[in-house]
Image: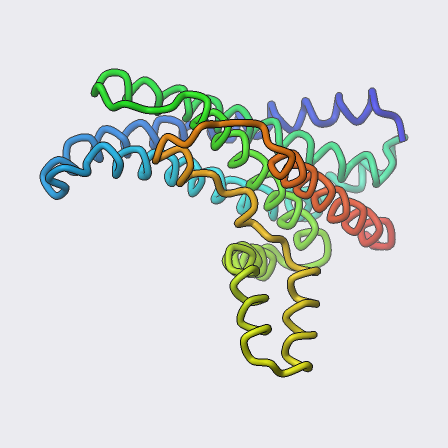
Length: 258
């Protein structure tokens, strides 16, 4: 694998994604916050500050998730549908380089989106005089980036071997289940049934535990952002899981015929 060639390809992915006007998501996010700043005081008598903090972070997560899923799923299939994949693999570009470049490019785009939306979010908080913990918000935004980058890896892995529609449904399904994997594990232990307990443990090992990457509540309630060993372990978990997904995607893609 040639890393310099991979980074050139990933740069092209970033430029291509930006040309698809994906950055309009940032404008849409600003509109959401503007509407929320007007509507929330009408419905939340004394909790509008907390609700605005929550809505802002949740919107960053949701919009990032949508981009990660729909762009990630279509990255490989779009190249196949346009037949440009034939030109790419005919050149001295390895299939592993192709998949890794797609992932790195999409992750870079997601990082740009998260950084821009976080900046807008902090701007609204300042203008409205809402008290907040800057380190907690920045840490929550970082873990949102880790979470949606992991989802991007899932989307690309599914997109490598199935249709865009099915891959999208599967990725959203994994995201939804990934947020309750700890609850599934607890449910299995409550049943006291060895078979169900074993099944829930297997599911917990296979599916991503996305709740480990959710620090939005900490940011909303101003909990002190301290880099604890558990946070470093959670960050490492997301990176390792994404790496396993990419290895799986590369292995599947390497055996595909076009």
